[in-house]
Amino acid sequence: MLDTFEIYNTLKEDLPESVASKLATIMGKIYTELSNTVTKVEFNELREVVRELAEAQKRTEARVEELGEAQKRTEERVEELAEAQKRTEKRVEELAEAQKRTEKRVEELAEAQKETQKEVSRLDMALKELADAQRKTEEEVKKLAKGLRETREMVGGLSDTVGYSLEDKIFPYMERFARKEYGFKIDILDRRNIVYPDGKFDEVNIYAEGRRNGEKIYLIGECKSRPGKKEIKKFSDRLKRIKKHLGGKVEAFLVGYYYSPEIEKYLKENHPEIKVMKSFEFEMKYSGKR
Image 1 (cartoon, rainbow, N blue to C red):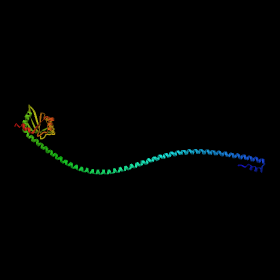
Image 2: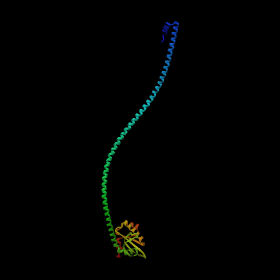
Image 3: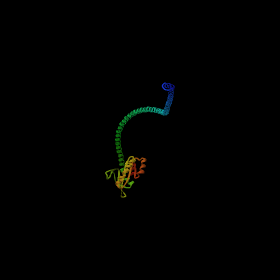
Image 4: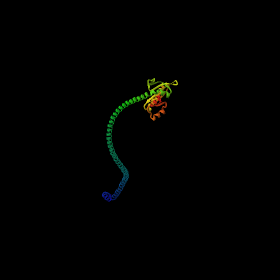
């Protein structure tokens, strides 16, 4: 604070009292004015600073609030990540368990594969044994087939022998048989082959020909010990070829030692054109003794 009295005392030493008093008063006023002026400026500056500080505080608080919100979001995200981490860890554990089960299954499959390989090896060995057995069987079958052919040839020979034996027994009775059963006299009686234009032929066990009422007639006979369907079918087919080739009237008969009921029925229903005779009937009916 300015001491005007002291200024007055100092001035009056060189100036008149009235002048010194006025100057001291003026200087006091000037000081007061200057003091008041400085205080307002500073106050205004302070207010501006305070205002700026208040604005800064507001911005700081807003930023702090934003940071608080961001922190909340960060914490929420961290919680979400923590939950995701837990789920990931759980999934990893599940995958680890699944991997263990897979490894166990792979081990089981590896063991099964080993057993399969052993079984395959056993099967290979068994197949080799079967192949060897098959080769041996085929060799045996070939031998049996050869034996069967030979047996068939023997049976065929025996069948022919039996057939020829029957024919030889029947031939003496053919004249009476033809006259009594078919009403004609035999001009030719033979065992012959019917040869066709293409060079093929059919063997005829009993062949007879003659005339009936001026018409050429042929009598064809077949002899079998026990006639079967297959043999009867062959005889029927042979007759068709012979009839077509000879062109005249062709009669047919079949002679056997025995006919099963099935064969008798088969002949009656399917081949009524073939007369069925039993071997013993020729001597009984056509010997002329009765």
